[in-house]
Length: 330
Image (cartoon, rainbow, N blue to C red; front, side, top):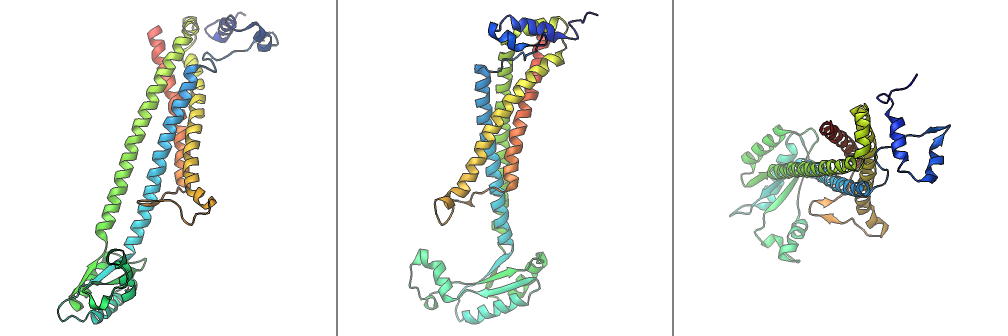
C-alpha cells in the first residue's frame, strides 16, 4: 500500500533537503536504504548563534537580579530579626538626676518585665567607645552630659505585650528614661526589602519581554530561511503541529544552551564573590552597604530555575510564532 505524503511528510522532506546536501553526506545519511530525516532548521546558523548569545546575556541579567534580590531579602531578614530581639533604654542627664541610680533602676525594671532575657547598662568605657569616631579618644564620660544606654535583650517568646509592659514600667518608675523598640528601623528595612523585590520583578519582566521579542525575530528568520521546505510540507498535508515541533525542538536546545551559559555565569559570579576573599587570605569578605552579599541554596536554585524557564519560554515562543507564520502561508 502506498503511504500518503500527508501522514509521512518526512520522505518528501528528506528528498528536498538531499538536493542541498553535499555528495559526501549522502552515504552517511543512508541507513538500510532509507534516508534519515533531518531538522527543518539548520543546526548551526548565524541567527542561532546570535540567539544563544542573546539568551545567555538575558539569563545572566535575570540571574543577577534573582541573586541580588535573594541576598537582600536574606540580609534584611537577619537585620530585622536582630532588631526585633533587642531594644534600647536611654537615660538623658538632667538637673539633679542621679544617672547611675537611674541606670540601675531601669535595668531592674527591664529584668523584672516578663519576656525580657537580659538587660545591661553600658559602662563608661563602652559609651566612650561608641562616641570615639565623632569625639575622639580619651573622653571623660562622667564629666560630659552624655545620654547613657541600657541594652535590653528580649526572649524568643517576647511579643507586643512585653514591649507595652516595659514601656509602662519605665514611665512609672524611671520618668527620665526613653524607650526605643527600633520599630521605625524595622519598618524601614521591610519597606526597602519589598521595594527591592518589586524592582527585581520589573527587571525580570523587561528581560523576559526582550527574550521573547528576540526569539520571535529569530524564529521568523529561521522560517524564512527554510520557507520553501516549510511551504512544500505545508501544502502536501503536513500538520502544523509537526512543522512547529521541528522549530520548537531546535529553539529549545538554543534556549537551554543560552540559559545554562548565562545562569552558570551568574552562579559563578556569586560563588566567587563569596569565596574568593577566603582563597586570597583576606580576613573578611567584601561588604556592601547592606552587608556581605552571599547566596544560600534557595538563591542558587532560583538562578537555575530561571535558566530552565528561559529555555521553556524560548521553545514555546518559537512554536507560537511558527503557528502564526503558517496561518499566513495558508
